[in-house]
Length: 158
Image 1 (tube, rainbow, N blue to C red):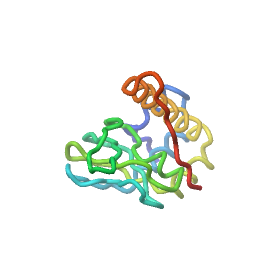
Image 2 (cartoon, rainbow, N blue to C red):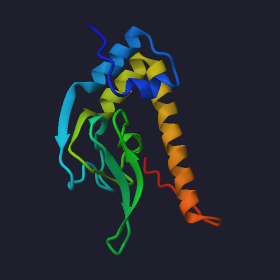
Image 3 (cartoon, helix red, strand yellow):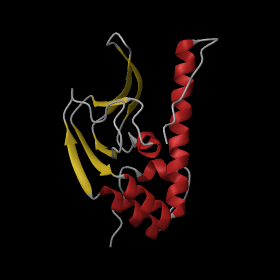
Image 4 (tube, one colour):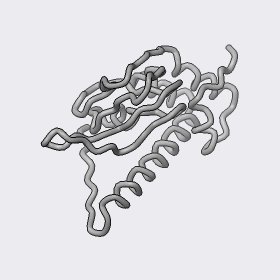
């Protein structure tokens, strides 16, 4: 099997050098392709047992809805990002993900991700480091918006 060098690889390569065998495991996460159009949520808050996706083209935003129906955009994801990863690992989506432009993705189900982590622990290390970096950036943005005295909370369901 040849290594495809997916859009996700550069994100992970910043944290861990991956061998060809580990890159093959990573490439296998790209077996299910899906397309999404703007204006329709790919993932919506409260969904359970959803898949995540790796963006192959386009870009999406993550947002939270307020009780009055307005929304707050939390982050934007671009080529190679892994929107929905946190929701996949926590079992319930805690935010919405909506395409801003037409999007091509690779759908990643929980079993796929856990199998990849089991067969290639360095892939797991890289994915979790990349996710931690992304979460830290979002937290910094939220604190910048909220200013002094802002409190952040996180729901964990499983």
